[in-house]
Structures are given as structure tokens and as C-alpha cells.
Image 1 (cartoon, helix red, strand yellow):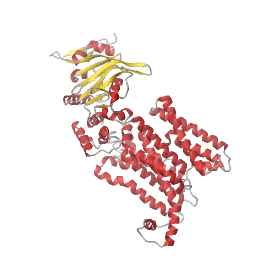
Image 2 (cartoon, rainbow over the protein chains, first blue to last red):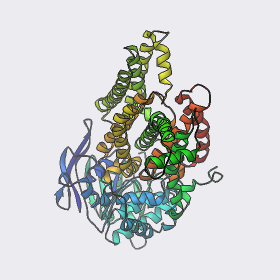
Image 3 (tube, one colour):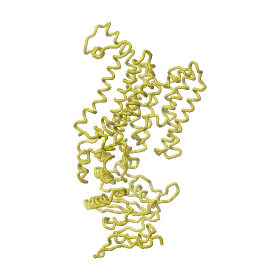
Image 4 (cartoon, rainbow over the protein chains, first blue to last red):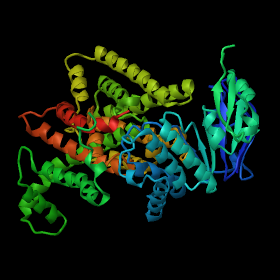
Length: 259
Length: 352
């Protein structure tokens, strides 16, 4: 369980977070929505201990982050960054093996147990066949899976993901969402940012909206994601389409968005 | 295009087949050492050199006069130079490889933060101030450190020590010391000092004696070993600062340690042997082709390959013509075709 409480953060005097409060527990898939520049990544980074809040604090398993050594924290929470290109052609196995760094420390060579953890993580995500391929050559979706496998090899129960779906094609997005939902069902806690309000409608257990540096709503997709919420998030008018059983399916732009 | 170029073999082969490749660099160093001890104005068959080494180790017998002659030739004349080539080549290659990981850029060389520019200006100043060899060495070493100190200082004062600011700081500090070098050259006496400066800037292993190697070897070996130990941390750093931090790596400490160790060993190479270019840029690429990009393996392999490369280049520098060529020229001439070959092989690995 990791919890940001009343977090304030400003870049060079420009406030981004003004009292954001958000928690992530194991077993849930939480989607964080916010406009460009709203501070989603900043909030994630404070929760990962990469940025220090100027006011407020972050608790991991009931202890302030400041009391945890980096390596301890790395065994509680894993960071899954946006897909990127590595400057050198590390194999997918090499990349996932980096997830063992918190366990081994940076000076000890990984042993058989670490290799086994890597193989298990690769197998878990169904990318065992990519192990020997250079990370620079596999597709964006496969890279994202490799980065998630690294987080699993890290043996942290909480995964914090910065726009995991960005840059993936439609099929990869849907498959990845299902993977993440499955990981949550297995007991991992997953916090991800996204720009598409339709995805959380169907896949997330909880939705949090970051508006004006605060979490304006935090609850089930049905409660939190309403056309009004979308308007306060993005300043556009949308309609919510519902299925025959009344379940929300998707948003559709209203006829005159710019009104 | 990506399909046409074959996969870098170290990446494609199963780990069982990779073992022999990892042995290539150290074996090359041994072979190059024996070769370097054998060739010269008084050439020896390699077997004779090996027999002398065995005799020196007490494993074989050799006539005393012959032993004395070979001792003089191999130990007193050739060995200091061979040791210098090994340490200088290994230092430059390891620094280059660690900088490439640290700055996430395969085109970076050990001079990035200004150490070579600083050391050159310092050496030239030493020559201008009297030309005592020890003064030149000390001055080269200290200004090399100072140049990097200024670059890193600029980065931390003005940009919080980010990578881009480090590079810009290095460029500024390098430019500062390059212009100081020009000032010194302009002031130098054009008949004695200026040629000495120019010749020194081309690099040579010819002035090394065992005494120099004695005091320089320990910090150089220490720096090389330290960089090799940071291999896994550098892998994580190559993926990005925040990722490395989230993996429990103390990013700032690793970065400053790497810069410190690389600067120390590079400055020592300049003070021992002058400017020797290209090695720090190309040897890491050759090593990467052999053992893959993982720095825990790459850095030791780069050290061995760099040593072998410089031994080979020094062999050419000593024996190609009647008079000795400056080794910096040889490494450059040798480096360009090698780099072209490497470029054609590694292009894939750089895909963005």
C-alpha cells in the first residue's frame, strides 16, 4: 500500500500539485486521468520517491518514504516508464534482469535464482520467446511488456506506470489492458495514467481525476467518470453511451465541442 | 534495411557459445604483449621471448650471458613501454565505454568533459615553463582534473547537474582550455618549445620509464577496476536516471564516481603518453560486438581490447619506419578504417 497525502509540488515556483491525495493498494487497477500538464507524472514520481513533495508526504506500508532506503522502496514499488528506445542493444533478458538490481545490489552478479526470477517474469507475460532478442528491435508493445516483466522480476507488489498505452497500436492497447487487469486480479496493485477515458470505463477498478493539482474525484468508473467530469477535466462536452443493460460503454463527442 | 544487416552475433548466440568470445580480449592482450616484447630494432623470435619469461619465472634454464642480454632488452627497454601501452589503452577504452553508458550515447569519447583539452593545455604550459619532464606530467594531470572540475562545476551551478548541462559544461571547459593551449603555443619559443609542444600533443609512449609507471600504475588500475565494478549500475543508468533510481541505484553517486574515475585515469594517460585519440571511442564498439552491450562484461573486455589495440599500434609506431611515428597519429590512421568496419556492423544497435 502506497499513499500520497496532501502532496504539494512546484517546479521553480510554478505549482503543479496542490494537495493531491491518492492511494494504491494491492489487487486493484487504478487509472489516473488528467489534462496535459496537470501533473500526472509528477504525482507518480512523488509516489515513487523520485521527487520530494514540498509539502505533504508519501507513506509506503505505513512508513514515510524518507525512512526507506532506495533498495527497500524498490522492492515495494516498481516504476514502469513509458516505452522508450535504449541507446544500446540490450537483450530483453538483460533489461528484465535489471529488475533484480534491488535484490542483488549493484555490485553482486546475478545468480541462478535471479535468472529464474527473470524467466518466470518473462513467462508470466508470455514473452519468453523474446528473451534473446535485442530490446531495440522488438515492437513497442513488446518493449512495454519487457518493462513490465522487469517490474515483476523486481518482486514489488505495486506497479506505477506512466502512460503504458501511449504509442501502442489498438490491439496492443487492448491486450495490455487485459494483462494489467489480470495482474490486479492476481494481487498486484497497478496505478497507470492514461489519456483515453473509454479504457478505464471498462477495465479499471478505480478512477482518479487530477484537476488543478488535486484529486477531484476518486472512485469507481461509474461514479467518477461522468460527462461533467470529462468537461471539468478537458473542457469538452461529451455524451456517455450506455449498453442495453445500462452499463456505461464509451464516451462520444457531443455535437458542438467548441461551444 | 534492418533485415539486410546481420544481427550482432554476441546478441544472437546462446550464452553457451558466448564463452569463447569473452576469452578473446584477454588472449589478445597476452599475444600482443609477447609480440610487443619481441619486435623492435633487435627482433627476437616469440619463442625466445617466452623462454626468457619462463627463465625469469624460474621455470627454464638459460645461459647467464644470454639471460643478461635479454633481461636488458626485454625488461629494461621494452617492458616499461609495454606496460604503459597496456595501462593507457585499457584506461582510455574503459573510460570511453563508461562515458558512452553514462551519457547514453555511443559516440562519446573520454574527452567529452574536457579532460584531454585540459591536460594538453597543462602539458604545453609545463613545456613553456621549463620543460622538466616531471613538471610537464604533473601539470598535464592537474589541469586535466581542473578542466573536468570546471565543466562539472558549471553543470551543477547552472543546471542541477543534468546530463545536458554536463555536456555543455564539458564543451565550455574544453573550449576554455583549447584557447589557453593556443595562448601557450603563441607564447612559446618557435624553435624549441613549439615543436616540443606539437610533438607531445601527438602522443608517444617513448618517454616512459619504470619509475613513471610505478606511481601511475596503482591509481590507473584502481580506476579501471572501479569502473568495471560499476558495470551493472551503468547499465541501469543507460536506461534513464529515473528508472535507475527506481531500481535502487544511487544515481548521483554513481555518476560522479564514474566521472571521477574516468577523469583520473584519462588525465594519467595524457601525462604519461600525451594525446592518444580514437581508442576511447572505437574500442568500446569492438568490445560490444564481441561480448554484447552489458557493461559488467563490456568494461573488462574493453580494457583488454584497448590494451591489445595500443600494443599493436605502438608496435607499428616503433617499427613501420626507421624513425618512430607519434602513436597518436597511428591510432588515428588505424582507427578510421576500424571504425568504418565497426559502424557497418553496429548500425542496428543504434536504431532509435
